Length: 337
Image (cartoon, rainbow, N blue to C red; front, top):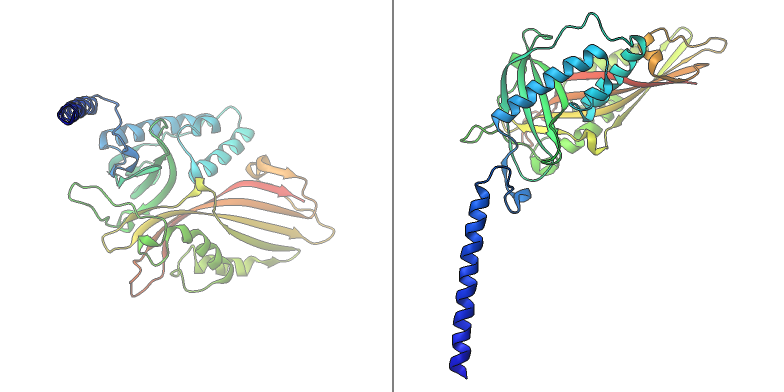
């Protein structure tokens, strides 16, 4: 009886080994098939895309962007843009369509050339890459377009844009195969300000000041401009600056050679203008009127969204101040009261 039990165990083990060999062979064969996904690929650290695919994404973006801008088609734009860039561009297209429903006869096509692709290795979703290109709309400068997607079944869409002088584009840290490094959003990024805290820090700075940000047009100069224009004969202006908490507006960052990072982030801004008793607010801009809700009787609140690119020093930097390299603020809505 013991002999038979031992023989059965041997035969069972042999069958198990043969099954494992067959399974390994099947998986090896599947790995070579196009379109197959690696088991537990959501945990594998892999390049977000290939340069060839990134080039196709950029070409498709350029072609569709031109058509959407030529016809003022916000819905078409939503197929290629998302997040903060999509929010500001689609609001602008809706306004322009209301004013010019037949499209733009003066449209000039965007051309993006001399592209290089900054592709990080990442695990899980979402994934992103950055296209660094020359643009026909910004001679002598570089466009940095962040493309993102939340799953393999989704299309790549542009979520951030920054326009920088060539000298302002930082040197990015690369591995031995030329891939850049995505920085995590939390404190493990080892930065003076974690990317997930940057939106709140900037909103706090605009409201209260401080030394978290280096002086510049979008920091100290902006605060001074607000101080000068807060009151004028017959009108008062108030601002409210809010951090972006929606996952659609999540920050994105790439490690730079100095140990810091270039971080793209979003903030929300409201400006309320109130006129004196006996006066009525005048909204003369037709594009603002196209987005206006309510009737201006005493005040108008302008709702804007801003996208920024910031050079964030490493946590141990001698000067921990964040430098804003670019800021784009656009109107997304308005309300009369």
